Length: 408
Image (cartoon, rainbow, N blue to C red; front, side, top):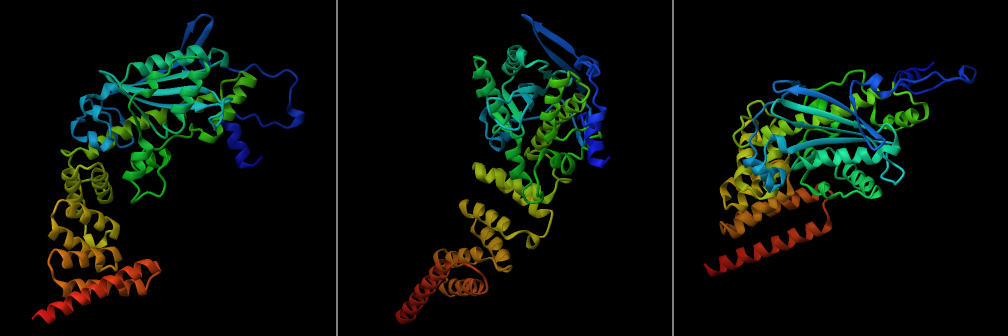
């Protein structure tokens, strides 16, 4: 048997040869025999619930769950003003496991995992749909839980989990107004925060590279989860679902850990001595886009202080220079443009030409920077339009220089 078949069988997938198929299949294990949880029953329907607690001081990778986090100074980073008035208890971290990988009407949510902070620490809840016929009580319990929190936090939840929840509630004729609460999708923030140093920002890669968390062999790959649930419905054997619960639980706990890590990292009062240079600069860039120039400059300066600016990507230098330009800090902008220009950055040369022409009224220096830009274009694949614009600028500067000579 191949290694792949062995791995799939170890996850509970039924892969058998014809002569091994029995006419009397063995009775499978129920979910409450596999997972130590409890049942919630109502009107002949029931939903299975698993609970676990992580006391404050518990560790997930390199993150310690702490009781106090200040949110006031970072509302602009998250893009939600209401965060200023929130505390840790107001956030609900959630993830869903579904019977398929599409958002079609035939796909259902069978496992809703979430966690939230209480007075004692991080509380984990997982709601399991034993029978699709009990979807109504399943969704009602989820909605009640969401109602008790002010902000939802997910990883790609805006594109998948939230639309799926909304669809299932609509199909079951349930109100879904609670899903309109503020929502932080950490996938989008991860893409911005770690774009400079991580090729992949999947949650599994963020766990490994940022949180230093390693899952055990109990982990089930996400692509296999729908099939395992389909097998469960066909066989009533819940044994393979233990790995699904493990997978889902770590997804939501990692969300809480990632949120805690990022919140502390972007706080203006946080010490950044151990932070990565590129991460600090990325935070500055995010604050720059949000319009908080004071915090943006602070993070850029701290990032540049950790390394040689000449080793940074030219785009980083240009972005920081643009921030200085918008604040009227021209000399700081010029220094940054000059560093980038030494590394053959076309845009930086053009900005220097504009600066010397319009701010310093130094036409000779402006003309020299245009010449430098033209040389860069001649050695690159820059567009013909860019070359024509520079040539036009060069001719205009020469005309101004000639007029000045004639006036003398």
